[in-house]
Length: 83
Image 1 (cartoon, rainbow, N blue to C red):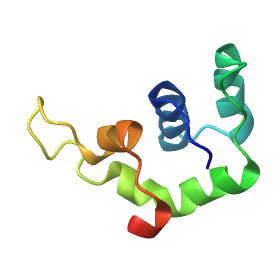
Image 2: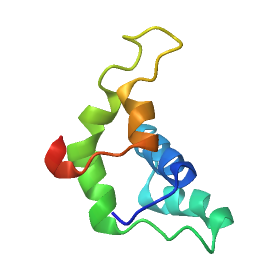
Image 3: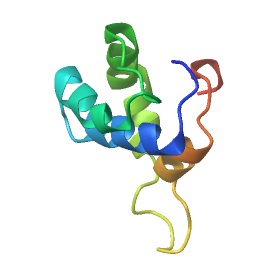
């Protein structure tokens, strides 16, 4: 996936976690154009298959004022090879 802003990643990751389709996620990104590019099919599928478990890991298991892994992935995404 190309380098994205935290706002773009928040929309994409929340969409994936929320079970939105690729078309729905890309529709949410439209107002960010021209900076946001649509999500490629291959990236969407990779996130649903490989990133999903890591994105939800730890949600709700930390104090409310601590960033969980989902929040960290928005600001500091890890390459797929590091997961």
